[in-house]
Length: 180
Image: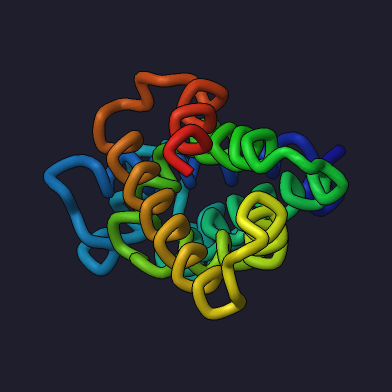
């Protein structure tokens, strides 16, 4: 309905604006600072007033996309909180990354700590699983193993994105899990 915040039309307009921004980021490897509201509006086929009704500026639009992806990732983690399988948790995370691959590729290419910070929220779960699998490991050794896994997973996800997401989230989660 017209006049209601976040109605379908407003959501569609936001999505078109966001997709236009991603398109501009990929064309000629533009940096976020080089992209103007005018350029986004031209590709999205909306006027500047429409853009400003939803976003303050281009970085605000990107922050909204990053927040949306973060929220989806945290939602996925919350759904899998009771799950004992790290592979299932990872499959869910990879599914969100694949679904939002354009934004994820930008974030991981430009915000090197984003995924590391996000995955660190799973730290206790991973450390707990490692202690079950290797009870002889002390806390200090477990921390090193966690950092090793975390940085390896981030690297694998970056490589997966760079190479066109050829494997399914399930297959990539299995590959990562088997490397543990």
